View 1 (cartoon, rainbow, N blue to C red):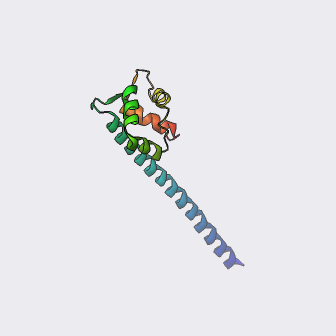
View 2 (cartoon, rainbow, N blue to C red):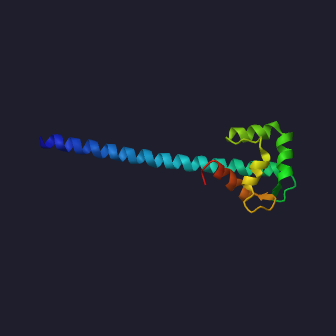
View 3 (cartoon, one colour):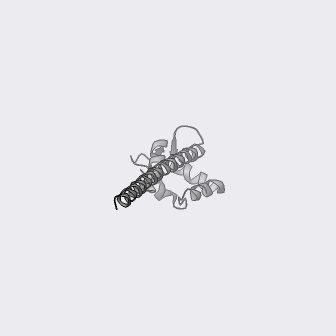
Length: 116
């Protein structure tokens, strides 16, 4: 009977360790996903920031989205809807300046996805 208790306790301990390891892996996977998404958002910002000022105006964002099917597809691949650009821009422009910095751009998109 004592041996059965020992075997059961070893089994339970192994199961608990496995569950904790699985949780740790899920957290790590999520962090890597978010880091990758942030890198993509920075790349998109650089594409839209054609004059390399570190700031994007709403018209510039609209123009680039209208001109570039590849950019629209990039947005869609990241789960972003580029069709309502004005609303999108207003959500990103946290300080109401009429322009968006890279930080506002990236932070805004991460918030739209509920990740920030």
